Amino acid sequence: MDETLLLQKGQAFLALQPFSVLIGAELHALSLGRCELQVPITPNILQQNGFVHGGVVSYAADNALTYAGGTALDWAVVTSEFKINYLRPAVGERLIARAEAVHAGKSQAVCRCDVFVLVDGQEKLCAVAQGTIVRLPGKSSAT
Amino acid sequence: MDETLLLQKGQAFLALQPFSVLIGAELHALSLGRCELQVPITPNILQQNGFVHGGVVSYAADNALTYAGGTALDWAVVTSEFKINYLRPAVGERLIARAEAVHAGKSQAVCRCDVFVLVDGQEKLCAVAQGTIVRLPGKSSAT
Amino acid sequence: MDETLLLQKGQAFLALQPFSVLIGAELHALSLGRCELQVPITPNILQQNGFVHGGVVSYAADNALTYAGGTALDWAVVTSEFKINYLRPAVGERLIARAEAVHAGKSQAVCRCDVFVLVDGQEKLCAVAQGTIVRLPGKSSAT
Amino acid sequence: MDETLLLQKGQAFLALQPFSVLIGAELHALSLGRCELQVPITPNILQQNGFVHGGVVSYAADNALTYAGGTALDWAVVTSEFKINYLRPAVGERLIARAEAVHAGKSQAVCRCDVFVLVDGQEKLCAVAQGTIVRLPGKSSAT
Image (cartoon, rainbow over all chains, first blue to last red; front, side, top):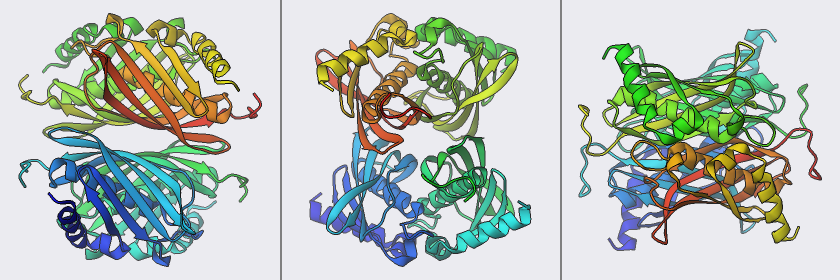
């Protein structure tokens, strides 16, 4: 699929997720096995110290992993599991989560994600994640 | 600390997290090394299929792990890392995340969490998590 | 299957793993979704400080997870992924890894494992693990 | 430190680990925050299907993560936790585990590792790992 069409399809998909809309997530890039998801940092998504809540960072990682795996497995997928290490407090203007599939088989893809925070025009790595995306049972690759 | 006071302190803490307020999270129980966090399931926190978004399930696990570790380490803590396995789609009335510290040292606690979904009065296990909570550098245990 | 027969089958299986034989692993209990694997602590499996090497602790967790998941999924399985937290140095007479399946579906089981070290007759928790065991593609549950 | 000296120091360190000697592990490269560890594939380290036992793959990942983190933190370190995804059976001549620190602070480093199997002169990715290496309490960075 053309990458512009792929991105449009991905964005339409994101718009169907009420929680992603609530948070204000934006899909900025999507290609085979790769994805970039951004979340503008607003007061709503912070914790008590003014940092982005870890739950939002893990949301961004989880969703980016799913997109990266989804393009590698033809869309009808869910995240089976993932692991995340937080590296520094996320303070800045935007979260930028970039994920890629490092291996894709018939039924699952293993993906990694780097989550950056954009602060004064510079990206700082604030979390790294790794997880498994699986094809939904009964969904063929033509879905 | 008296458990009623501990719970009140924990609830006051949660009220300071804008993201937890946005999601509607509730702290239902808190004791030394243990915690129960609930999230009422509302349309806002769903994904495209009507299930609770994985990001909310991971938020609940992350925050419950942090509370369990926080009580074991005297509060000034952050989640360093965690891992989550999703077991089934979360469909129902409430998420219930129960976490406990399985080991606490001077500077970190390792905790586990079970996330259930309450559906028609019954709890179904929908995710399990495990992670590390660390004391913030420079914070004494008296903080 | 009768639990005595199940254990014998599991022990025969372990005897077919040259690496498990090299380490001296022993299967002490096996039932549906549960397993206990032990490793006598010998000089061969230590690291430079006289503790059991982390790689042996992770082997014990990995293999115990696989057995627990294997009985839940009818044997033809592999470990897809796992995560382990080391809690304290393993010093003592034996490693004891106890695993159980917390959820089993058609194609995968999610399992947890506690690894203890036996020292002077007492068990001390030294690691906790969580992972996914998957049925080998093309293997029916009758295998 | 000169990289040749660093590698010699690392190799001397590996020689002090009886379990690494038992398996036949070799340290092939070591620099600040990076490491390459190899394990020749011998019958001893296999499982019942003739693949390298998962426990050996996880050993290689764990030890490579520790070296990568150790050089970033000045040596007196242990692995606190890690997660591994197995991607394909390891069949071939050698395991090659390459790890790097993606973030290093004062007391811990977060590292990633790719484990390849060398088969007919070609490297195939067979596992990916991510974990936390921590400085041993009470050990200064000058140790």
